[in-house]
Structures are given as C-alpha cells and as structure tokens.
Amino acid sequence: MRVLFMGTPDFARVVLEALVHSRHEVVCVVTQPDKRGNHGMICPPVVKTYAESVGLPVRQYAKVRAEGTEEMRSFGADIYVTAAYGQLLDKAILDSAKYGTVNVHASLLPAYRGSCPVQRAIMNGEKQTGVTIMQTAEGLDTGDILLVKKTDISDTDTAETLMAKLASLGAEALLEYLDELESGKVTRIAQDSSKATYFPMLSKADGLINWNASAEETDRLIRGGTPWPGAYTHRCGKTLKVHKAYPTDAESGLSAGTIIKADKTGIYVACGKGTLVLTDVQLEGKKRMCCADFLNGCRICTGEVLG
Image (tube, one colour):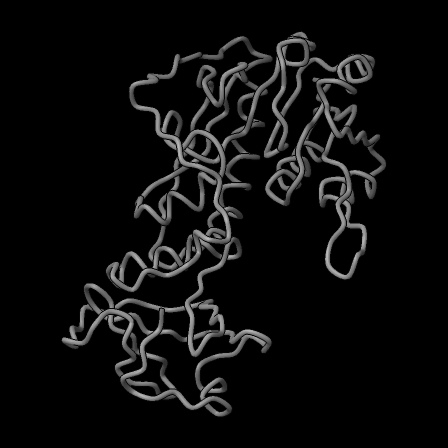
C-alpha cells in the first residue's frame, strides 16, 4: 500500500520507521517546518532527519491546508497516516487518498481527545492507556475507532517512558490495521461522545507544584511533566526543578511545603497528605543533580518552606 505519512516528534518517527521497514511504500513524509532552538540554531523535526536519512521525499508546510493539498495528492498515496503531526487537516486533505486519512492517537478514545494525552493520563492517575487507530474526521479526534491496543501505566512511568512504549505499540497497531484494510476485515466503531474527555494543552505554569496536594498526586505531576513542562517549586526566590521524587504515606504534622529533613537519601517535604522525597533536583542556574551531590553545595535547613 502506498502511504503518505504526516508526523513531527519522536513518537511519529517510531511509527514512520516501522512503516519504512514494512512491505508498504512510504511515498512522501510531511512534517512541520524547522524551528529555531537553543542558541539560535535551526532544528529540523526528528521525523525530517530520519526521513532524509532513508531517502524519502520530505515536505514542510507552514499551513498544510493552504499550501500542501495539491502537491500531496500528486504522490498518489492510497492512504494518509498521521501521528502527532501538529496541524489540523480539512476535508479536502482528509479525503485525498482512496482510503482517506487515519491517525495514530496515544489514548483510548474517546478518553483524552486533543493534546497531551500521555502526560494527562499519568497526572490523572490512570492505570491503563493505549493507542487508537482512528479514521480522521474534521472534529477533534472524533472519527471512528478502527483498532485499539492497550498497555498498563506503571507507578514509575514518566511521560517520556510511556510515550516510548505507546510509540512502539502505535507502530504495531498501524501495521495490523493496514493488513486488515487490505484484507477487507476492518471494523469501524463510532465513538460515544458522551464519554469523551478533553484537557487543554499544557503550559509551563502547569508544572508548578502545589504542596497542598497529596504526595501521590505531586509524584504524578512530576512524572507526567517529564520532560515537559517539568515540575518545579521555589526556594529563596529561585526556581527549584524537581526531576525525580517518590511519595510516602508518612505524616509529619507540618504545614504543606515544609522541609522535614534533608540528607543523602533525599529532601523530605510535607504535602497535604503524605511526604514527598525529592531525589533529583536542579536549582535555577545550576546543573541537574542527585540530592546527595546537591546538598554538598547547598545547605537545606529543616523547617524551610518551599512554594
């Protein structure tokens, strides 16, 4: 089957790589424009870098609906596949190929439609998630469900580790769906919109730790926010990023945000319920460190309040 692929981040690269090594033919890769990164350097999307490394034609459109519709049609794809592409598609694009457009979505639809489904699933304490192959429609993740694969969320998963698992699962699901499509065995299930959930895109502000929350909730915030938007608090007027921590049920009787103790095992902070032990932190202007190294150069006093 001739596939035109649309995607941008590493999640999409994993799916694209599986397509490249399958019996299907990738006729073109569409991705977002290059962006200016740190130190003013121009950074291409990882999907572009991979596609070019295996000799695939790449197209980048600032506004795909305005610039790409006709050129994309010229590649004669049987189906368009999207995976974390980053732009909305209109009906003219969705219907361009014989089998339309399908999307590899990192949630169990209709739950977690829209952006950041992986981060939100961890932050909300979900125990299970998965990927949905969906027939893309004009609404936001509203199309028919074509194939679903599930996986558990562990107590140590971060958005980064879970995204990697879901990328591999999504690649597997897509190839399975393409086989079903060719054999005419596809089952389409309309989504129950009454069960749909949406969450707004995450911003840096969402990473601010609220110490009045429980230790378990705060741990989920940290893991769900890794690597973006990152979790942080403030100490002595400076930002203190928290890269790793773990929750305990221990109650100190101290106000939320108060440091109970700090030693080589971690910085123990009272929460609204339980205690959070910070094990990997980064003070504003400094490098990321384990707490043992951090405390060698920074004195933390019992009774200090983070906020």
